[in-house]
Length: 424
Ligand code: FAD
Image (tube, rainbow, N blue to C red; front, side, top):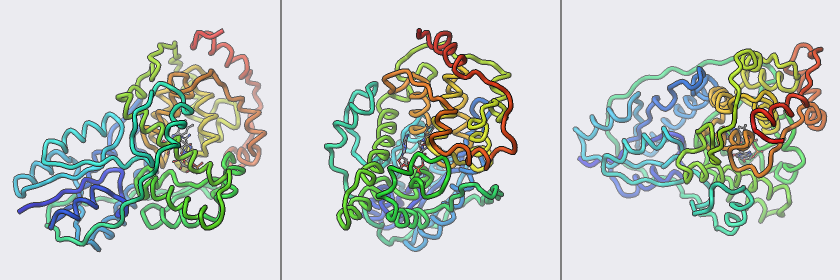
């Protein structure tokens, strides 16, 4: 019997899902398959997928399971794609349909899927992949990318038949969040709801996006995009529809602009053959990053003495969330003030962020660590930034008392620039 297997990884949705769409259009029987192995593993002592993302993914899976049923499709759970595909191919004449992802582990799994008759699709970005010099800056990419048309999202799959096959049970992670935490309800329905809700805010986005706290100050699309509860193309075309109905503003354009950064890092990771995971990054530069246990311990236990940094670390560890501004400050402080190996902090973010994805995380970190697509050496002044972007209230939310120690962070950054980065 012929059977199409649709692989689910970070494409946990029914709409605009090419592997599901095409499998259901050209096959009578379809089975979905998800493996928990993609949530496992450790890096620099951190669990790769911490409790916040695990909870988000599992909740998305529960909803996907029900949604696929409406199309007649069973979703099976395993802990080992390779083993389960081998069992399925013993029993059925299988064709595997999968979404191509970027990242070394992601590509390794793709080689497992490609052992079988297969079809694969790249749906991670708004734009279709195109060749550009991945070592150059975002502006170089943007000049070309902005001229490209963005394909329309695919619709919904066909109703088909399925088969019964063994499936693992899974338990949901229960988490309690602090009162002020930003918390996300997962799944395709919530993602679409968030998109609709945010249409009211698209003309104020540019003025509010840098705030350190507050749910509606930025789109909060990132967890949904990372788990694939929604596609970037669905967001883009909804935005365009809203602009046609009303007007286009600098602000509504800026959401597209930020989504283009996401596309950029995904395509840099794709074309650079995973050099973004290397300490020397895209540039192949061997800087003298420090490995100072005391600094690391103080940093990860939120004891740096710089309130805005400590508050950010506490927010991240207790909620899985951090605004873009705070991510920049924390990454900059770790690398450009403490001079530590940027990959360790990237692994820390990978573990805690509810919206982690390899391209955005490692792309942004490499940028901050001067080994990515950055053009100039730039250090954030944490105190000045805190004053500009509402840090006082933010610090009150996350810290019981303010630090009284004097930290000469200017001197620290000058020493790091010279000793670690060999720059005068
Ligand atoms: P908005 O400001 O509303 O932006 C809209 C969308 O544009 C976002 O959902 C996101 O998909 C995209 N976007 C915005 N800023 C960036 C950016 N700098 N790089 C890439 N895409 C962007 N984002 C992740 O999704 N996963 C990560 O693991 C991740 N790690 C990061 C690590 C560091 C050190 C830094 C500085 C940034 C990181 N980002 C990451 C990017 C950015 O901080 C988040 O995408 C953003 O804060 C999510 O909030 P939002 O959805 O409200 O974004």
